[in-house]
Image (cartoon, rainbow, N blue to C red):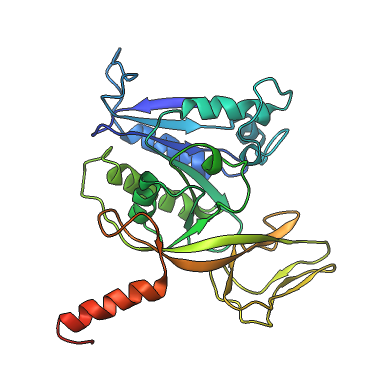
Length: 303
């Protein structure tokens, strides 16, 4: 694990983590690009008192990156909180990474996948910092993973948001991920080159994983595309996943991204509002739409 500390324009302590999976090199490339763009800390400057801000940039799984494989012994993003005494490299690495992020006000973890765009974010615990991150990123969807795994970075390190920046191996993922990191730094005051931009973000509750059996896989719906009741989402020689429940959408939908799953089902639960525009909660879409209609009427009628 490599840690690079850089100067912050504000007082917040923020971190960006790349290279959690070794077959996702975009994260490392983005981290090193940000490191080149931000000013270095003054030599000998104290940062332990929490008064001055810091941007911590981490390349997490160097061994897996060198081997160009997702992991060497265990999937790091399924190994938290880990075990410092473990013989498995990633399981022993997890507590080191956790310790490097202790006390930080906001953390952004970079990922890529084999699923189709658009990019989206993932959170497990909705804190005010997480709301600020999510609504300040240039994306439309965030997945609430609080009901899924409890062994990921975003489920164990406070104020962490994971972001899927694009298709694995693509230059577009690197470019988008870089812009997303700049937006993340702006919304937390670590970068002052331009004002942050916030917007409502659609929240999708992660429901359950969709198992893959074997043979030739086929996925018929892309991320966040509504699956009509009765339609087949995905199939292979073992499974035919026909959706009987209306309102489900795919998350991380991919034919070859995972060995054991096609992705997962999700359901749109509402929207997350930017800081200062409501309470810290997910607003149902009908409630939000109703408020918009009311505001339009007060302004002189609907368009």
